[in-house]
Length: 245
Picture (tube, rainbow, N blue to C red):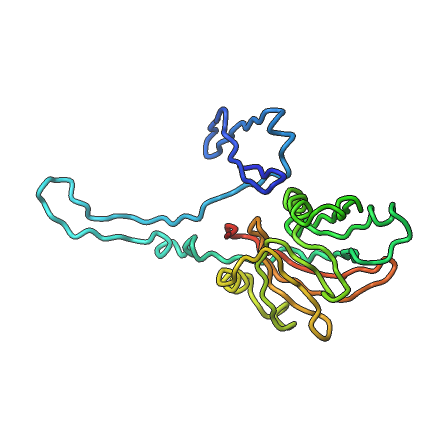
């Protein structure tokens, strides 16, 4: 078990006591009040593993044997852990407000949900005072909140991403590309400080993406609704695999 801080740092939680009851084990995890104030989210992690047997190992010094290494999954019919199937999670739909829209007043501008965290699906607003600050201050604030992208319709016609990998694909990839293939293609892409996830011609515009926290998936821009003006998207995250950086 780990927790993630506001700036995206992953911290393991140490267990205080473990109790075993038959085939089940339970551990008490404790965090201090100071630590708790920094926590953005908890994550349960697991390691891939594969059972193997080493057979015919010599127990006598100087006596050589032919050692046989046997993959237990071959005999049990199980799929090795390293190749177990991964899949997509549920489809998430959001409208990210256009950060460049003409707002009626400062209050409306400050409350507009112009940013998104793809890992959680959360939308964020930012005060107008914050956008008058320097670019570095804006980026630092977005990174501390886990923000991945901002809606920008003029010129961009989509989302401006921060600290992401993106790959443009054909719309058919939404139905035809497997979760494993998505992660494989993203593993070959380069993480970039600023990326543009934009509409390229007809809807839906389709992209593979991976966030700074490692969450990967496939996304489509499906429209630009009005009142308020924004970027309508749907996406699905890959689940069942360790997140890659």
